[in-house]
Amino acid sequence: MTGVRDDAPLLLTGNQRSGTSFTARLLGAHPRAAVGSEDGVIRIATAWFPAMSGPSGAGLRYARFAEFARALETREGERWSGARRRVEEILLAWQRDGKLLELTRAGDVGAFVRALCHSFHCSGRASAPLVWGDKYPEFLFQAEALEAIFSRARWVFVVRRPESNLEALARKLPERHGELGGKAVFTLEHALEQWLEWNGRWLAFRAKLPTERRLEVRYEDWIANPRAVAERLGAFVGLDLLDEPACAQDLERLDPARAERWRASPLVGELARLGRDARVAPLLDAFGYSV
Image (cartoon, rainbow, N blue to C red; front, side, top):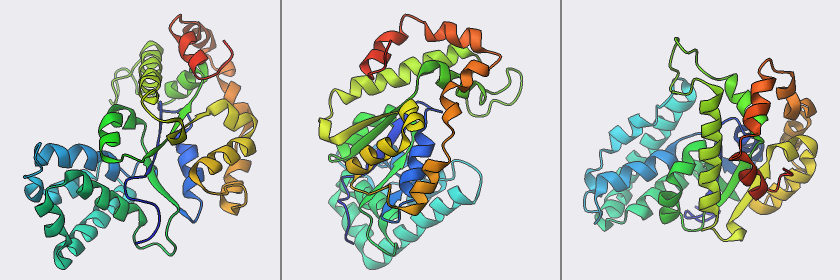
């Protein structure tokens, strides 16, 4: 299989509701990009197989491959069932041609995870991808483990000002006495703590990354000057996003009013107060915002 190396995925992350989904969708629209949006294989494989295999890798051949595939159905719907089926197809093909035995006998867990993730994203495509990877906000909590396996990974981090980000989070908060919805975030104060924690995690991690392997994108820049950001993102990943019609259409759909929508929220007073929290300014400064 030709294309980019199996140790060099694009890992797209950022706080929830910061613009990561749009960024992933834009990249994924390019025919030479195999970039998903929470496909989950990279995230779960990086946690699953090292834990199942032990420090020496000796347990790799007993790593419950069928159970791993079932774990990919983390959400309901055809898309996530499709991820499970695709992984099962890859592992069964490897079993038939001897590659599974070869990889597991070697006991190199990193090599196994890289081969599986690369194959999931890149194999069976009409043309070899120039970039492959996935988007997951929770990559922030696996950053060191991901770096240990994917030593040439490129990282894209999307950041959004807190007032706007918290307003978007508030529209997704579960009801206090209703369905949990997979989260235990119930107030704007909780959402601010998340903003501080997740963005702070990235700032601590980025200090360990060489500059050529990381790119930061501000949500507000997407809204204000989408073509300039798309050009910068394209240069980073090696794709001409502006000349691809599907990508250009996504850029045209961006609504300039989104960045300031929080000002029309009934929660505007509380959002403004939280945005003035003393812990916010140092992070904004680190991301190049005017404070």
